[in-house]
Length: 95
Image 1 (cartoon, helix red, strand yellow):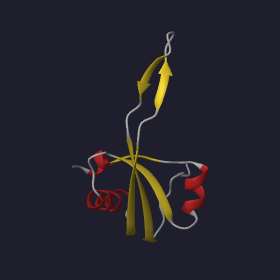
Image 2: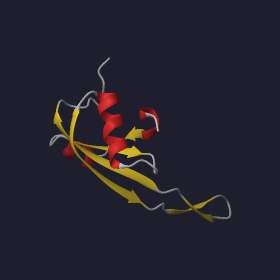
Image 3: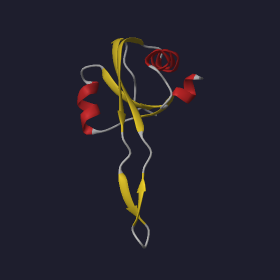
């Protein structure tokens, strides 16, 4: 699996902003990716040294959509929390 296929997007929330101060960053990753692939992809993309990777899978929520309010289940998401030892990840690049 290629590096750009493993990492889908960074997760930017209030919780992830407070974790970023402790050098822990949150990313949504491919559901089939394992910890080794996630670590390698982030090292390639952001050029940082990674200490640890924690992964959780969130079940998709049930939403009611449309005029008839038909229930639909949103897809599951896999979230990786990455602890960086050396360097930082710039989630908000300055232009």
